[in-house]
Structure formats: structure tokens, C-alpha cells
Figure (cartoon, rainbow, N blue to C red):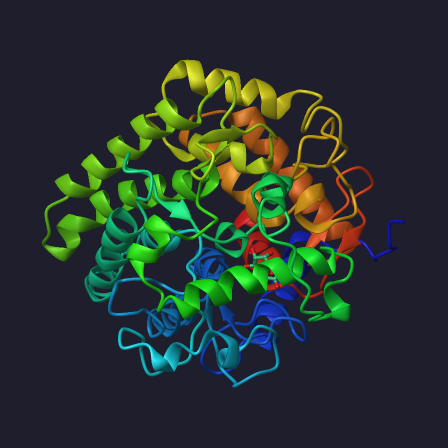
Length: 420
Ligand code: 2M8
């Protein structure tokens, strides 16, 4: 049920958000939340950069640079940069990044995450005009995008494939149920009590098994292409990548570079998503079965971030978003899975609850398409969630009650942006 919280005005909410981010700053980076997530997570950091852009640009710059210290020589930007040796499972002793020639000195995971960083850099530039910082960060992001375009184009059509549910940022999304079920039954018994409300142990064991297979193959791109059993073209991951390519095209002149390759990359992604992921709604494509995974999740709306999305796709996708399958049926925006799906669960993590980060991404999409009413709904609904329940990790989309961690960094950071 909804927790009672004293009413807070905008100024007080902003101060609370900044205080959460200050408390979650370790001196080198911002942890997603105290306790459960004691390291730096990649797309969390990008959202934090976005939220801090207006208020603490110095901290936003440090956050991004700190994350970039974890980049591999291949260009891969890892999904976790570790600040302490263990304290989270799977930690450095599982990933063993230090044994890999391409890995940096700092300990990291071996997987990547949604490439939101160029959009975050663009956002920071937009609010600070700091071209020198763009020049400093730009080469790392060129390398990140080149890695995705080469090592991750496993389908050969111009999209980047994720090779693990963790890479989607939405680990237990119903979209991964089928591909996970096709893996062998694993029983490690790595029980993590805090994760109990999220995914069954059997799924968590499969996550670990998949990560270790990739590790044992030397994090090799050839292995991913030819053998790895989990390879998926996800519309949210690629929609974010496309938006980041467009951001790179705008930033390129500041870095005295040519914008054309970034703009061309964005077009390739747009065309490939329509060709391969569109069927009345965007779906993820399982490259191992070469079939669409026909469950509609909040990930379906990633391509809306593209200002060049053709009208047909734009209108059809917005209709689904506003319908009783998503926002039209819940009191709060936006459930992480369509509510009519058998897998929908309002209490479980990425299987139903609403998240501030995906709401923010959709609000950004509404802004690029001048969908003002949708934008207001997303802004007001999200602010209502945090005002009522605090900076929780996620929220029940029907009654707005908070779920998961408290003092969650991206909920606080993006609230700052929503308040502006
Ligand atoms: C969640 O993912 C981690 C694994 O990376 C976990 O479940 O332990 C996701 O919500 C992901 O999107 C997020 O980046 C991470 C840290 O907030 O937590």
C-alpha cells in the first residue's frame, strides 16, 4: 500500500534529490543505491549525468570520466565498474577482467549496457556549453560506438545485439523468458536473498552461467557470433544507440570531427529496426531462432527516441503506449510490461512496475516529436510517484507504492531534470 509521506514542494523535492546523490557519491562515482548496488553501473551513471547537468556540472563530468576509466581497449564500456573488490555478486572474482589483455586497470564486468552515454554528453553540453569537455570525452564514445557496430552486429544488419539479459538493463523482462528457457537447466544455488523478489534462482543461475561462458571464451567477439546461446536485437538498446548516434553527429563538430558517419549509423539503425523489429509494435528479435519475441514491454518504445521515425511507426507505437495495454489502464506511467500479457506482474521489477528512467526516456521521446500532452502526463505522473513514495527503485503502476531499493540514484537524478 501507499506509504504516507509529508507533502513536499518542488524546491524541497529538489533538495532531497541532491542529498540522495551526495550520499551515494563515493568520491569516485555514484552508486545506484546504498547497500545492494555498491559499485558504478553504466547506464545509471549516464542518467545521473543527465540529472546533474544543470545543478552540478562538475560532478556530472566526474561521473562520466570515472565510468570511462572502465572502458576496454576494444571500446566496450562495461556495465559495472567496481570500486571495491567484492560486496556484490557476481563481483570481480567472477568477471576476472584483470586477466584480459584489453581490460583497463580498474576492475570491471565483461558485459556492456544500453549506450546512453553520448546522449548524456550531449545533454551536459546543452546545459553547460562546455565544448572542452566534449572534446575530452568524445573519442571514448566513438570507440564505444565502433565496438557496437563491429563486435555486436551479430545479425549482420546494422543493429547491436545484447548477449545477456543484464545488457538490456531490464534483466527479468518477460522478453527474455523464452531465450532463457532454451538454455540448459543450471543449478548453482547462488542464492541472493535480496534478489528474491526479482527473479527465481533458476533464472539468476542462468544469468551467471551465461556470463561465465562468455568469460571462459575470453570475451571473444568470434565466440559471440558463432556460439553464444543468447543473442538478441532489442528495440530499447538500439533505440538508445540511435539517439546516441544522433547526439554524436551534433557533437562531432565541437570535437573537430566529421558528423557524417554518426548520422549514417543512425539511419542504418532506423532502417534495420523497421525491417527486423517492427510488426505493428517493436519487438525484440531472438537471433538464435531468428524470430520476434512477441511480448510487448516498455522496451518496445525505445525507437520513439528517434526524431526521424516515420509517421506510421510513430503513430502506431504511441497508440499502443497510450492504450489500455500500457498507460491507459494504470494510474501511473509506464508499466514495464503490457498489462494484458500473461507475464505481467505489478510487483516484480522489470515485469510490470514503473521506472523513473524509462518514463524519462519516453518523456524525451515525446519532446522530440512535440507530443506535449504525452510529455506532461509522463512528467506529472513520474513526479507524483516520487513525491508520494520517495526515490524508490521502481513503483507499482496501479497504486504508485514504492518497490525495491530506497534512495535510488537515477530516480533522484531524473527528478531533478523533471523539476526543471
Ligand atoms: C539492475 O541490474 C542489476 C544487474 O546489472 C541487478 O539486477 O542486480 C537493473 O535494474 C539495471 O538496469 C541497473 O543498471 C542495475 C543497477 O541499478 O540494477
